[in-house]
Image (tube, rainbow, N blue to C red):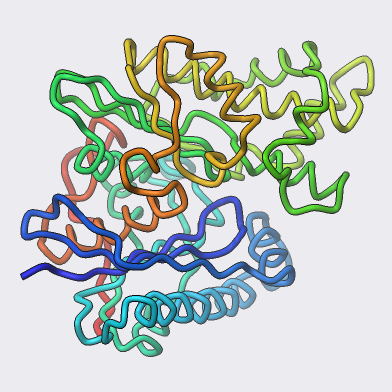
Length: 372
């Protein structure tokens, strides 16, 4: 009998929560999404989650309250997908709830470091009446890994093709790639910023949460000097395993890049340059680590940005660059489905990490259980 799991994802783009109800076969292959729901964060919640990415007054209290608020949104998304699919909560084996990353510093400070996702999985279990699996990243970090990205194993299971090299590019707040190599190896790592900086700049100068279809960026011109300063960021040259987030690619980083120039770029040209930076860093990673990829499958909100998709395709003329819709899984469902898959891996007591991706000392079962 097929197993039902729910996956919940709220990423660094801070646009809200995506949830999916997934049906899995006995071997976790051939998953089918039965329902998908999205709930946007209101401006106050998004602002507080953004603020908690940096130190501030009374942050322990604020983080706890923000985690409760996030779990309440999660519970609403769970109710939405169950209603859509007309499925009772009792039929769902577990919810995979990623939480909201606010700090990600693996290997730093004491040699172990940490990764922190705000969440209240106990509250979610209470509100939903379903077992909750959460805190997926920390086990990998304590084993010496980056704790990210965790989706490549899932990508291999749903997008891998024997004898073919395929790249999967996730364009959320941060961009990450998965290289599904023809010889069966799987690589993956964060490759740079995606929507996080573009959304920030658009909100600052246009009063809009994001640049719809990349139309504003498309109206500007790339500032070559600014792009060169950005490309000199040490993270881009660092060999994987590697991961990043708003700890590095944040408004202060962008402001430092702007301040280092001898001339002031127009706002629209900065947006065009940020789009080019994302396209360049992602395509360079694919060329180097997925050489000869015949297809690039794009997921995350950036897959809906026509300008960004065209820029990436221009850097990869020998590959077909398409959203994951072509493979039966829409771009906004992929990451949520991955955490449903990871929840199933936990319940089945199967490792969820790939050591070639994260650099961990070995395979680890990821997550912690909060029974209903």
